[in-house]
Amino acid sequence: MTVTIFHNPACGTSRNTLALIRHAGIEPEIVEYLQAPPSTGQIRGLLAEMGLSVRELLREKGTPYAELRLGDAAWTDEQLLGFIQQHPVLMNRPIVRTPLGTRLCRPSEAVLEILPVGPLPPFTKEDGEVVRDSGVRRT
Image (cartoon, rainbow, N blue to C red; front, side):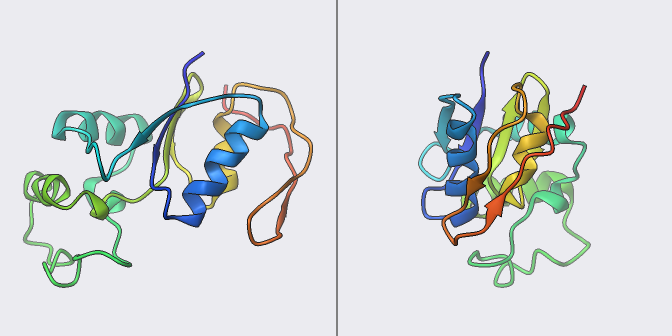
């Protein structure tokens, strides 16, 4: 069983998502996408798997989004993908791929829906919030 997380260790949501995956007893493949950005083709594949548009993947906070005026509807998907290639920080995170699907895991507990394991015991996030797993998974 392969589980992959596109991870930014500086991001609390990404750290919590990784910790939840490990809490499930899974050691995922970790792709630190700021250091090893996925190709445009890989990003297209992830978007298709998640059912998201390129715009839905863009991160605004802490990125050059405003400076590049990426909110302008004139930018095409191909142009936006080019910006993500140039500035990987524009890619929202974390993205997790499992045998049950691929998902942008914001909030971090969204990963539970695609973990290929039974219900997990409660998990405490970095900020002290307790996550309770309903056991509901994609089929």
